[in-house]
Amino acid sequence: MSLVATVRKFCFKYGRNSDLTSSVVKRVIEKFRQTGSIGDAKHTGRPKTNRSNVNIEAERESAGESPGTSIRYRGQ
Image 1 (spheres, rainbow, N blue to C red):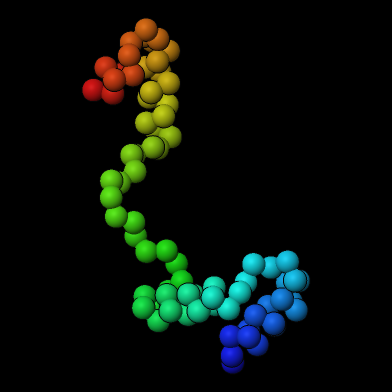
Image 2: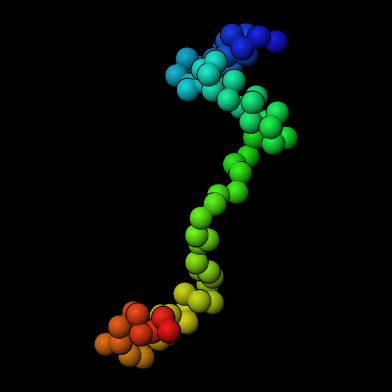
């Protein structure tokens, strides 16, 4: 199927206000060919901090016990 036909079918089904264009379709197809998926690749750089419910609750307790303690000191 051609790019134009794909965009037309998408607009017919989801309405004219959809953001799908032929350039978007090209990018998705190329991404699928390269990675086998259309999902985002893993990001490089610094990993996110561990923000679990257990850690959040421990921080709340710590702040409640000594509210004057600095965040930097509590983080140690």
